[in-house]
Image (tube, rainbow, N blue to C red):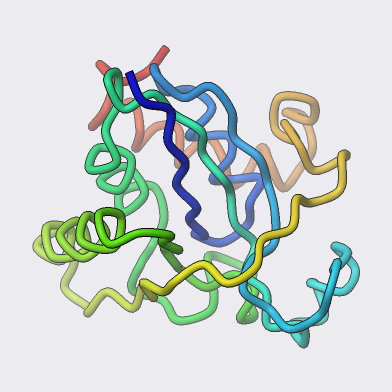
Length: 175
């Protein structure tokens, strides 16, 4: 058993967090901000689109139960990796599709997953695969946001379709 981490961004972190929290082998999902130029950014800072950060999630997982390959395959299914700097109504560089790596193994897994996923899309995948520079956890009220706010309008509109995609293709990986 090896506990590992994977940091990805696929639009709003509330939406991606909600998906990955439902997987066997995932022990934690933390919303955060990565690879920008403003030290210790706040959500208000990020929302301007001027900090350079992406909204991301940090997934802590047991790779004897779920692999990075599976997590990355799920990532490419539950968001649209062909749209540059937006997901649905969320617009700005903070919503970019990104995979942030800290080692060559993760970089290679990300490149392979991107190549596998391209077969499912007509438009080219624009997901950026880049080294992790800086990571900051988001404020406490963003953590486990969907679990605590399932009746919030945005959550009701955006997250259930992502969960349906997860269940349709990866039901056996779900808790």
